[in-house]
Length: 395
Length: 125
Image 1 (cartoon, helix red, strand yellow):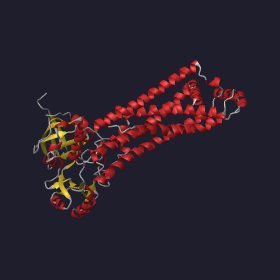
Image 2 (spheres, rainbow over the protein chains, first blue to last red):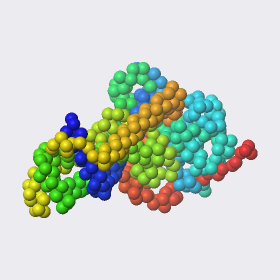
Image 3 (cartoon, helix red, strand yellow):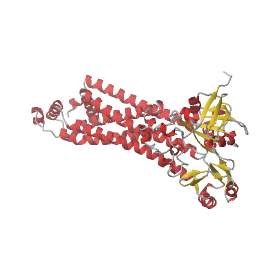
Image 4 (tube, rainbow over the protein chains, first blue to last red):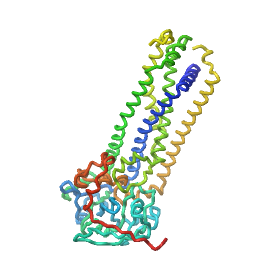
């Protein structure tokens, strides 16, 4: 123990003597760790956020696909679906997308008739929608900002301007969703089913999809088969399938970004190998002196391993801390752009960290081990130098 | 390595103290980071936050995040039909990941929508 403490102290001294190189390698390591950890933290946080909401989605979502594209469903089938044993409730939903040229943005319009009570007061600035209220809407905060509106204002929407079905109607913005829910509500325009139909061009008697709740969610497969027989071209998405779809999407994105970072890690390890292999004249002389005064091969080897360990720990710890600050304090500028794409409306990326002690330890150890391993061979070569040749300046 | 060589010098002691200080600071910062993450997780799981999240998901019917509205299959990946990547617009680019680096020419959407929107301010301050 005492011996190792002395060797660690010697390694520290050596690192301080070669401070330029030590700082450069630690900084490079910190940078690569920060890149990896950022992707990991971001992916985990997004996955957790999605998972946290997944339990509240309907047991089954029924869509209709025609020629590979989503088609409207006739609401007549809701009665037949409701009769299927095990089905507790069926709701025909009217929702869809509206591209609004003045703000170059896609808006998600949701008809919420019968579900107004869900938009309770704690969720909105202004007030919530009232049951049966027509011509009222609640906007996502980001959409409201883009339009420059706040609760109490009105928006006049003109659909199909200059076209055969041109129509203008006015919606009163009764409230805007608070920032806390922006991750899900940034681009929402929630209004009555009638308004949603008018905005989206969905005729009465049709719906975008059906939300089906089952008495026993385990019977989703049986209900899916029955619905598929009932509705031509039906595509039934059960909760389980949906969760899998999320996992694949987010894992794919995270994996892609990680794969893009692999060359950076490889380059750093290569650099570390190169720096550690090439002993400077001063280092060679130092090892020669140490061996001449009685240091054993194991002592020199241990000292070099201590050097690598210290650099790896400092680099990895700084990298993890930087990644946390980058993702959760600075909201991942740059990296978030990969998620936003060319969206005009996107929420601030305020995510809940999922980082725990085990993940932090795994990151630090996962970086330290390969780094020390890369330094082992050069350390062995340094330790086995012949003192006489080392002091005389030979190879 | 003799016993004399193992005895730290004054400079060695200063270096060791400095290194211990750096190591301890990093450890404290890592612990603070984990504590902060735990605090934020607890805040996201209070009964009020859970109720709000449930209400939003039940309202929208999906738990998709509004992180990207570049494309239907990015805005609502869970309910997009197979092949959605190709059906958003004519000559639609692959928005993920290339869409992040190469923006879609907005001209493609010109004429695709004839929606106009006007804002009328409320009299209230």
